[in-house]
Figure 1: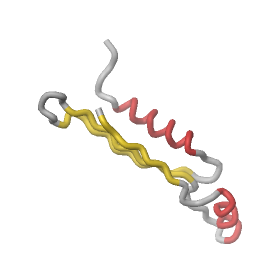
Figure 2: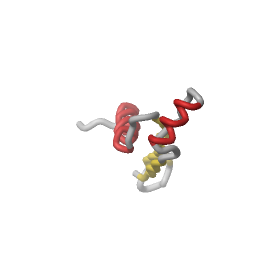
Figure 3: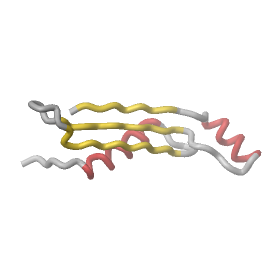
Figure 4: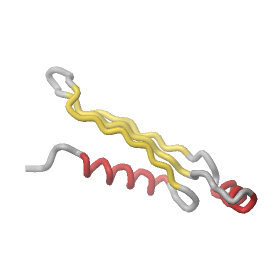
Length: 82
């Protein structure tokens, strides 16, 4: 099993508020992207892969992004505890 998780804060909360007041539209203030894959240990064959990107607006934080992406990933995970 391997994977990456990258978060980004493209716009500060203050800039988002200013943009919303001046322009009427606010962009995402936090975003995250994950890629998780499970490969067969003996052959290296790809068994399962999950890619997801998510952006949230004003008032969001990195923990919210991480939790939302991982909650969605856990629902798609192909294996269950026996």
